[in-house]
Image (tube, rainbow, N blue to C red; front, side, top):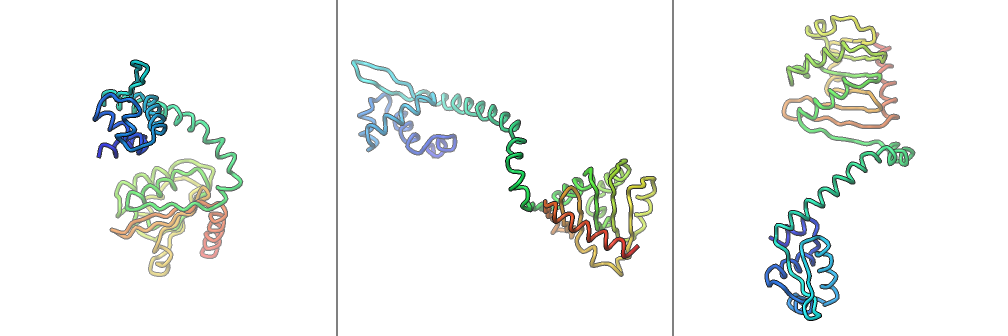
Length: 252
């Protein structure tokens, strides 16, 4: 168990064995420690120097013989703290370098569709909020009645998102129900709504679909089986936007 802990914080398996043995038996020269462990003397020497660099082992010379001793286990905390500080430092460096990484891969990685899955009602809400907050042309087949039934707070968020002035076009095909008239009782010329009767177009609303920001999102709001799928692909989004507009123009 102790060896497992050491490995989890960055020790190798052999470093863990050497440290625990030295902690158990106390001060030892390399030759005796290697014999106890059944390991090569040169290998043990290298492992001890590595542990010394980690600050968990110390050494001293007596009568021309070099002895090693395990430091108090509290030194393990110091080792871990130093390691965390190093990771934090390089984390900040990496964050600032992310744009350069993206520049070097724009012509390859981001041409491939990226598919993300969001499970449960919270996952669906995350996708819907991302859709409504996007500053781009938006298209959507959305069963607002099911959205509001799933989360009452979503109605207020939806109204606020629609009132936001934008130069981008926002088209939605919705099932016709009483609440729609209350929601769209405002002046925003860039928001267009087409209401259809579920009796005639029910298949269109079996799954919600949102198209925006180079993404195509498919949502399922069936209670107990909610999920969202997001496909990030500009070509796929452009294709579905074209299909949406064709449907829109043919029904108008």
